[in-house]
Length: 139
Image (cartoon, helix red, strand yellow):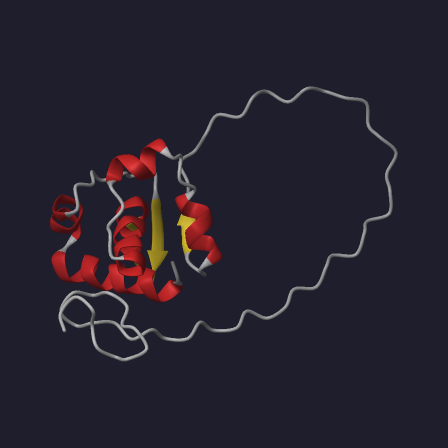
């Protein structure tokens, strides 16, 4: 799944509206699983399920994303979105004796992220087009 697939799912989310979007694909709103894009908030599990459809041709089912403990926030962050994960209760910290301080290691430098090439998408069925430019589904 690429950023382009996620953006296509966001576009459909905006076109349909939240309730229709989650209803069409069988998702239920998950308030703790959201992400922001262009000052709007989206349901991350539903958008990733539909982005999976654009990437593979088969939409991910809501129960697949919940049962697999999908790290939706991590996937979205990897593709440059600002995602929030539901809050979890952390165990109480155990007090330890302070260890002697060490000199901090230098942080590794990151390579700049290269932009992903834009995929050609069929305007009818929203699947990625093959190299021929003719949709295998629609003809």
